[in-house]
Length: 370
Image (cartoon, rainbow, N blue to C red; front, side, top):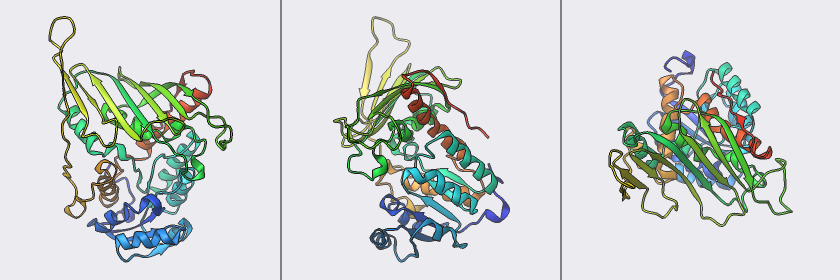
């Protein structure tokens, strides 16, 4: 909402630090080319990563850690692309230092951390945004247009899946409850339906290898969950796998309606989604369903021309995320995935893991509305 920020926090040109360059380096040149970004500061403990990011971004100031960034009063905003166990701590520290904050998913790993972030955001009055790629991909934007046109009819069911083998990744991934990192699977469904999840029943599946570390306590390599929604008759079925599952990487969502349905590509190399159409008024035993696979092109509408070409990563989402975060700051409003919506995308996974640990008993999900 316009006017959410304190007047002195609204600037038309900003300086932003990208903190964590193993993945964050992909965002640095987009910020550098955004018309409302005056300077990009590159931050990582690994000097080689900083040098490679600077080669792609152009000459840039560098920093070695978040403390150094927050000590620099000229920096208005930070984009945190750090390890997921640090998201809550880093976010709170940056908010308390009066900075605008964008953070990679997930927002946090516990309900308590979510509440602490919301409280820090209230005190700071600055912008917070969770950088959820799944709700800015070209496939999601296509499905969103279909939804706005009423193409689906009455939706009764949605399915989200995220398979990704994390073997060999940094140590904090070892033994991570899969649902703690499930926002890519549930966020597009909640966004399309315009609702939130109110309760969940989940089961854990499989066993980790005996030598797997358990820094998060007891967990499972696969978790499956059914979510009830607020004021919506649909049910969401979410499956999340972090390992010990012979399946290529995919983040996908599918929506099934009375008139038409949409299925995200199940493999990255597939040409595009499948869409199904059926005449709900047709009579007879079993109605015919037509199947097509539309080609979804990048349509960078609403982006500044200087960043419209950066649609090669994560389904074309990166420039949209950057533009929304920067625009929220320069326009003095909350972001599209602010501290409330981020909590509503993150909390279902925390609740789902709790349900799985308890053998599938229903667990209520806080709304985290402010």
